[in-house]
Image (cartoon, rainbow, N blue to C red):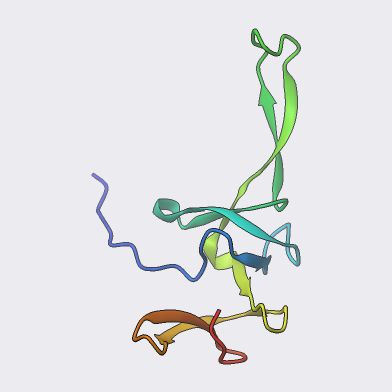
Length: 111
């Protein structure tokens, strides 16, 4: 039986520009296209490309080998700070409107 764990907020959201800090794609940057909360993984545009074999079918009688983005563990990416363009650790603090908002721990500016 699988235990239900409460999901915390992640430091990465769909649409963020991130830099990969570990793994085969280390150093590459891209935009997050999907966050898979249940598995703590993200899909980043143009990063961690894997080959997928597709069986022949009516539309594609030849079959093919296509390249798609694979998932990366969320701990292996850092959000790129828009103010200086570098990967930064993030935190949360209240903004002017009393709402929690992410900020860069390096510059202290909101993301």
